[in-house]
Length: 125
Image 1 (tube, rainbow, N blue to C red):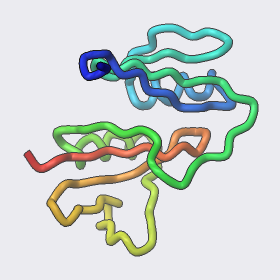
Image 2: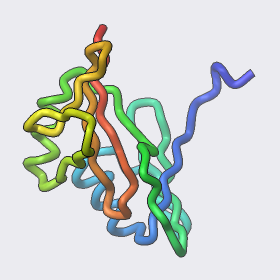
Image 3: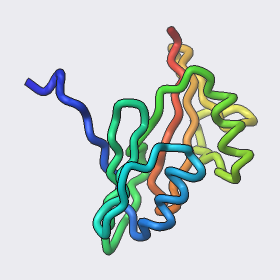
Image 4: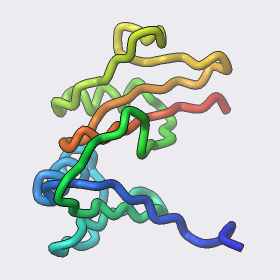
């Protein structure tokens, strides 16, 4: 039923101006619209609605991620813009903060200004 519908992703934020700067300025997503309720962006064919909330308790898991063709180059670009890599005990991330899954995929994590966990994944093709 929804297999051909476009997916809309949502991320909460307590400060839309700060989030707009991060998602559009730092990550380079296309800014579509800003309202008092949401900052609407586009990543590929996916709409991302960064929605204003009064309170936020970031979750300890990934809420949004990107499938990238060259994780290490993308990560280097983010780090050069001041985005810190998240590190997790017991996962076995390398010096750059990249984890190689048992199947060979590469994954790394970082956070938005509200503390939402975001990820990059380079899948084995």
